[in-house]
Image 1: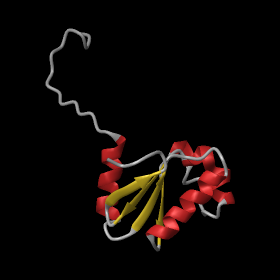
Image 2: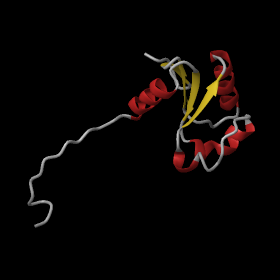
Image 3: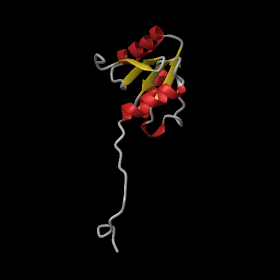
Image 4: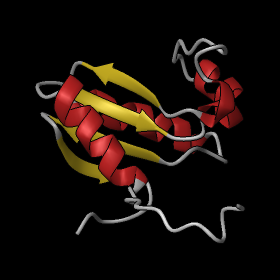
Amino acid sequence: MNWQEKNFYQNTYAVAMDDLVDIWVETFHPFTTLLVIYDASRHFDLLQKCGLLVNSLEAYNNKIVTVELPSILEAFEVMDNLKEEGYHPFMQLYDKGKLLSDNLGPIA
């Protein structure tokens, strides 16, 4: 019997990347300022040039990299430094588990 002839019970769920990141931040970083950087492996040289100590083995396969920072102002400074270099990754800034800003436009 092939799979097309068989009826079986299944649950299928679509999970947005934003939801996964929100849950990660709320669970593991509920009291900190966190910069979330997407596609880190594509921007590895830029991250290192701007002083972010990202291990290339940890940034493989376009992983999301999170950077815990002491304050919101320092996080914005890091975002600005990365943007000044030209082509930069998509970034989101969280504080105390809540999304504050990203580098694309206003958060609704």
